[in-house]
Length: 67
Image (tube, rainbow, N blue to C red):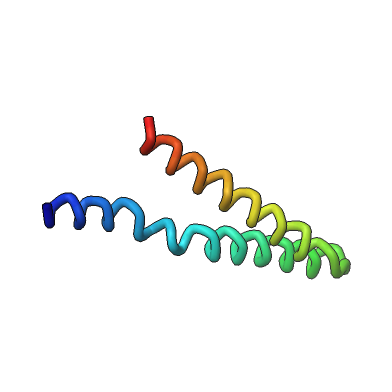
C-alpha cells in the first residue's frame, strides 16, 4: 500500500513544476527576443505559448497514464 503511494507521488510530483517552468521558459524566451528586436509584446506571446505547451504536456502525461 505504501509502495503504491510513493510510486504515485514520484510520478505526479514533477507535474507541479511543469506549468510554472513552461510559463517562465516562454517568458524568458520572449524577453530575450524583445530585447533583441526592440519590441515589448513578444514576452507575453511566448508566455502564452508556454501556458499552451504546459497544458499539452500535462494532458500528454496524464493521457499516457490512463491507457
